[in-house]
Image 1: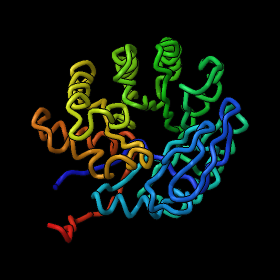
Image 2: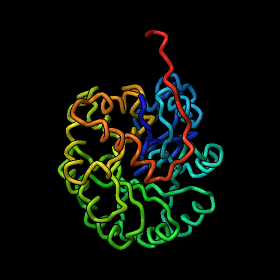
Image 3: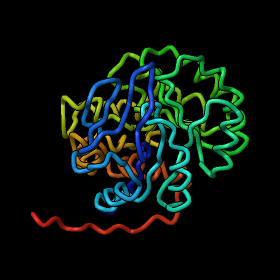
Length: 296
């Protein structure tokens, strides 16, 4: 393949057991979970015990020739700081793990744990983002990365722009590709123009266009539009593993970009890996040769 591939948006957990807005999320068996009080297929059915581990992910990464991955967090999975601390220590060159913190005290615990950023599922929180400014300021001082998924109705965009201006050295990755299926898409992507350290990552884009399915032609057009607005050097690929691979394989979550005739080879290289290597500081990634499928 000849291209560096880095996943800028993925998830890991040992077990889901939490509540969001009073509704239950709980790991079951055969890849299923109770999600907001409904039973869903959260993981592929061959993950019998509901554990979404680093080792299973590494097997998928090696097969799909993905060198490194950024692991973010979500309220729906519960706080995974303890597990991700262990993952970061065991696989420091393959993973860039984010903690979860809602105040300065919790941030200090994330820093002591050796986690390298903090992920905020902003689309699920009700408090104004500006109330978290002390946390963002401390992250800026520590050289940490902020992963932020914003609400799709646009109410947080001006607040996020203020955070970027107040913390110019803070690295910020806007998740879910700025919600390209909503009216806030352009405004979210244009946050990359607010500061030199702001990136847009595409975690979840195949889920957003799931009804269209592979090769996701509208997703490709949205990626090109975002590049026209802010440049290819501000965009990164993300898979939203593992939830997206209940419908497609892990490799398919980037293969639709790799095989597109609407994106140049140099731009594919930036989007699929080079930008993430620069932004997150990945180094010493393995050389992953292609392994032929038995069916080929």
